[in-house]
Length: 107
Picture 1: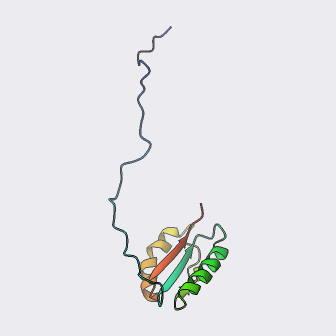
Picture 2 (picture 1 turned 90 degrees about the vertical axis):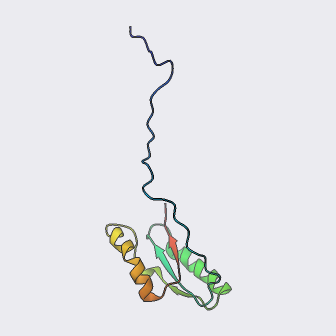
Picture 3 (picture 1 turned 120 degrees about the vertical axis):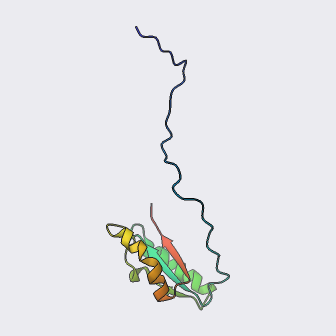
Protein backbone atom coordinates (compact mmCIF):
# COMPACT_ATOMS: atom_id res chain seq x y z
CA UNK A 1 0.00 0.00 0.00
CA UNK A 2 1.38 3.43 -0.93
CA UNK A 3 1.43 6.35 1.47
CA UNK A 4 0.05 9.72 0.28
CA UNK A 5 2.58 12.39 1.26
CA UNK A 6 0.86 15.52 -0.05
CA UNK A 7 -1.01 16.26 3.22
CA UNK A 8 -4.10 17.25 1.21
CA UNK A 9 -2.29 19.82 -0.94
CA UNK A 10 -2.21 19.46 -4.71
CA UNK A 11 -0.47 21.31 -7.51
CA UNK A 12 -2.87 23.22 -9.72
CA UNK A 13 -2.47 25.08 -12.96
CA UNK A 14 -4.20 28.31 -13.90
CA UNK A 15 -6.13 27.55 -17.12
CA UNK A 16 -5.75 31.04 -18.59
CA UNK A 17 -2.81 32.49 -20.40
CA UNK A 18 -1.17 35.75 -19.34
CA UNK A 19 -2.74 38.90 -20.81
CA UNK A 20 -1.53 39.59 -24.31
CA UNK A 21 -2.58 43.24 -24.47
CA UNK A 22 -2.87 46.02 -21.96
CA UNK A 23 -6.01 47.89 -21.04
CA UNK A 24 -6.90 50.51 -23.63
CA UNK A 25 -9.00 53.60 -22.99
CA UNK A 26 -12.56 53.58 -24.24
CA UNK A 27 -13.53 55.75 -27.19
CA UNK A 28 -15.09 59.08 -26.26
CA UNK A 29 -18.88 58.89 -26.20
CA UNK A 30 -20.89 60.96 -28.64
CA UNK A 31 -22.82 63.77 -26.99
CA UNK A 32 -25.82 63.07 -29.23
CA UNK A 33 -26.87 60.84 -32.10
CA UNK A 34 -28.65 63.73 -33.81
CA UNK A 35 -27.19 64.12 -37.30
CA UNK A 36 -24.90 61.11 -36.84
CA UNK A 37 -24.49 57.98 -38.94
CA UNK A 38 -24.82 54.71 -37.06
CA UNK A 39 -23.91 51.36 -38.59
CA UNK A 40 -25.51 48.09 -37.54
CA UNK A 41 -23.28 45.01 -37.41
CA UNK A 42 -24.57 41.51 -36.82
CA UNK A 43 -23.35 37.90 -36.80
CA UNK A 44 -26.66 36.53 -38.19
CA UNK A 45 -27.09 34.31 -35.16
CA UNK A 46 -29.99 35.53 -32.99
CA UNK A 47 -32.91 37.63 -34.25
CA UNK A 48 -30.77 40.67 -35.00
CA UNK A 49 -33.10 41.61 -37.83
CA UNK A 50 -35.89 42.08 -35.28
CA UNK A 51 -33.69 43.66 -32.61
CA UNK A 52 -32.19 46.22 -35.00
CA UNK A 53 -35.65 47.19 -36.29
CA UNK A 54 -36.76 47.98 -32.72
CA UNK A 55 -33.53 49.79 -31.86
CA UNK A 56 -33.72 51.89 -35.00
CA UNK A 57 -37.33 52.83 -34.32
CA UNK A 58 -36.60 53.84 -30.72
CA UNK A 59 -33.44 55.78 -31.54
CA UNK A 60 -35.09 57.64 -34.45
CA UNK A 61 -37.92 58.67 -32.13
CA UNK A 62 -35.39 60.30 -29.82
CA UNK A 63 -32.97 61.57 -32.51
CA UNK A 64 -34.95 62.20 -35.73
CA UNK A 65 -31.84 63.26 -37.65
CA UNK A 66 -29.91 60.03 -37.09
CA UNK A 67 -29.06 57.96 -40.15
CA UNK A 68 -28.64 54.20 -40.05
CA UNK A 69 -26.62 51.93 -42.29
CA UNK A 70 -28.26 48.53 -42.14
CA UNK A 71 -26.56 45.27 -41.23
CA UNK A 72 -27.55 44.20 -44.76
CA UNK A 73 -24.80 46.49 -46.12
CA UNK A 74 -22.12 44.46 -44.33
CA UNK A 75 -23.54 40.95 -44.24
CA UNK A 76 -22.52 38.62 -41.45
CA UNK A 77 -19.45 39.66 -39.47
CA UNK A 78 -18.99 36.08 -38.28
CA UNK A 79 -17.82 32.94 -40.02
CA UNK A 80 -15.11 31.79 -42.36
CA UNK A 81 -14.04 35.28 -43.45
CA UNK A 82 -14.55 36.92 -40.06
CA UNK A 83 -10.94 38.03 -39.68
CA UNK A 84 -10.90 39.79 -43.07
CA UNK A 85 -14.35 41.33 -42.54
CA UNK A 86 -13.40 42.79 -39.17
CA UNK A 87 -10.04 44.02 -40.46
CA UNK A 88 -11.82 45.93 -43.24
CA UNK A 89 -14.35 47.69 -41.01
CA UNK A 90 -12.22 50.75 -40.25
CA UNK A 91 -11.74 51.56 -43.93
CA UNK A 92 -15.40 50.89 -44.73
CA UNK A 93 -16.54 53.08 -41.81
CA UNK A 94 -14.44 55.96 -43.13
CA UNK A 95 -15.86 55.54 -46.64
CA UNK A 96 -19.41 55.62 -45.29
CA UNK A 97 -18.86 58.42 -42.74
CA UNK A 98 -19.81 56.26 -39.77
CA UNK A 99 -19.91 57.97 -36.37
CA UNK A 100 -21.00 55.02 -34.23
CA UNK A 101 -21.73 51.31 -34.43
CA UNK A 102 -24.19 48.94 -32.81
CA UNK A 103 -22.84 45.41 -32.87
CA UNK A 104 -25.26 42.55 -32.23
CA UNK A 105 -23.50 39.33 -31.24
CA UNK A 106 -25.44 36.29 -30.11
CA UNK A 107 -24.05 33.83 -27.61
